[in-house]
Image 1 (cartoon, rainbow, N blue to C red):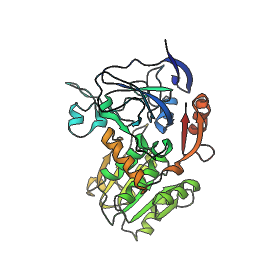
Image 2: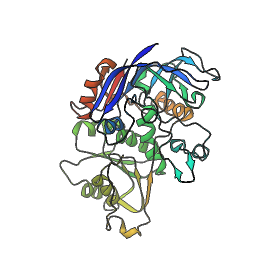
Image 3: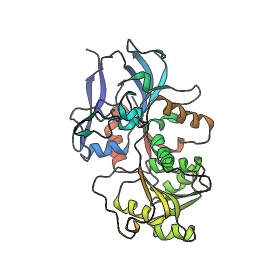
Image 4: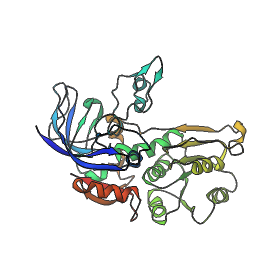
Length: 357
């Protein structure tokens, strides 16, 4: 029985490296030899027990690798080809997929449907913090990596780049808009880049950490607000001469940042929510204008599929966005427990960690 190393969820507070069987390949699957992956904030929610997954599940959902073996029915790909797969792996045939929301690829029943169903890696099936990962529905999800792009250049495409740009896309940012992005972690930085790509002419990045604000400027922020020194709501209203912003993007997942986003919106503005929330949200009466402010609140889950990945890699290849500065630390898979300790405690200025088996 061929074995591989994999980072496995054992119990809340414990993700450990174990030996697991290399997956068998079904007709529509592809087995990928992982060359680079990373740790996501969602993985930390899993580690802490804030998001439940099965014990023994391999975690991780951001793979870059090489096709090791193709299923018997997979066409259009070759073994040995460099590829990525999105964190979201839609089937392509469900009602949600056919409506254009592959990330919500849940099976509907008379009792309703399961949200987030398109997120399978490290959630409902084994993920990619391992030497190998099995990609389901390979012809829907595998995207070849263009020549000349390194693993680290495309490492953000499967999740945080797709998610961050979706926050801007879902908000329908227009040329000339003013946009505030609350929290400049990896998702927020990609949202900042996405706002600039979408045509916003004033992008305001908010965070408490100086190093993240510096990276925000490199991602396209015209203004940065240090929320450890000033009230970000007051400062944004000063920057906009009291008008407020057209779009506020929430990229942290807390009540405080969600409420701040509401308070800086102009009448008729849009709050685009990207955060993963671990408790109930409250809508404050004043900030919500008692429900009469013509506001919109939209949410996004990372779009996946091979066409989405192709588009994102095209943006990287064009040079219009450079996400290289986000990779601040590098670890071998053998040391992934140390990598989790660093990333979960946000030490040493960490943004993203590149993991190489």
